[in-house]
Length: 612
Image 1 (cartoon, rainbow, N blue to C red):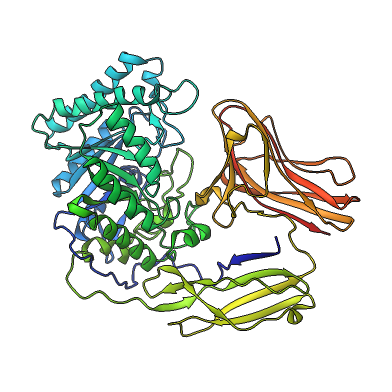
Image 2 (tube, helix red, strand yellow):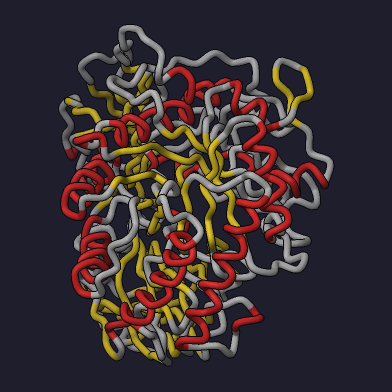
């Protein structure tokens, strides 16, 4: 690359985690329905309470559900696992689900029941059968779904807590109850297998609710991905004839699932195309960048950058308000509402995502780390208030950081990120002061200024002029996907990904996965090098377990050099380095070699080659 550009995350101090006393602004949402769903998934609540967690409103200890209701929440969402058997993550078996449903109904809250059909977490990356059903398939597995679903609905009905909505499966973008109901992968049952299972879950609900008072939802992840939703529901509805459901549920986390405009376009399209209502079944945002325990948070500086809002109480409120507005504006009243995922998940020992583990969600709760309600929770109430919307103004500008080679003029961006008074972050056009190459003829730190319309202060570019410069093209896989890279071998296992947890910096990374054993190399040859010593570095994260995964340098005039990559978990990034690459022929091939087992996955990012 000729230069390196980054957006500085150091422009602002992290928002305080003790933020209960802050004031926020929330613009009303025009035309929002009086019965708009303002929901909260509180499946962790009982485990938090058992572990000693307490909740406070204006200094007074109260029931968390009462606090949620007082601040505008009118629905709860409850996940149900078949037999978690102490696995943690809420231990959401039927008994716990019935208890939470009874508490919610007593307060007048409506209930969305979320069947995972698993003993533990089910999402697009895993949809494991319950242990009791492990050997079942075909008609037997379909009967399992019917019987379990029917029993839970009957038990809820008996205790007077009939759910108001039921979702058959959780984030089933690649099906459920693998492999029978899996869409893609080894031994996958495909859409036909999934359809048979969904139909039995739907039938169990309808048989116990002949008046059809309970709405039925089919829920996918990646709410901004219209192609996913079209391909899934075209096949499910038009080819498999699964039509007896009412709602399409979408997960939409702004830092993982695309822009708000993409969410809007998707909801508008699918609600009309399939004649179904839509609900954002999961969303959330951080109120701080701080972390309360040893479990790494899923929301951090990169998520703040990608998500489009500051990690602050105000930013959290604005993010949720904007998602509600997007749903409320779906044509023909098809947008029913949203559910905020686990606003109750405060950091309490014993209430981790898994027994013995911590809470990676503590900075996305709507209570501070001590259980005090945050002002952002009022977003649920205040979106329905009357009043004139307040126009947001630019509050500050993110700095731009550039690294260029001596004697080279920096390629300045046409836009910089501005923080507005509602803590939204948006790109704005900038006009930079004139620059010339002569001004950067020696190593050092330089500063350039620019003007932005509506901003009180200047835009600032900090320019680091160095002899060292990254010689790899498209080093972060940001330009045209895999442009400049050559993939050999099982190229179908390789693509680029934009999910922030899978990206080290920027917005993209090289991703690999396949449902069978695979082997590939991804490389590029850097030419025009001066002979001498070079250093190669790269970042990696993933599930681990590959037969051999290496960073390598070759074709430079010496023996192939490698650095073994050993991954140890999602979002656990490690840098790998190869030093003393003695180039004698003016070139060097750099890249990755991966000999992997079926199901191995990971991402690779930020490759650098520079002269020592």
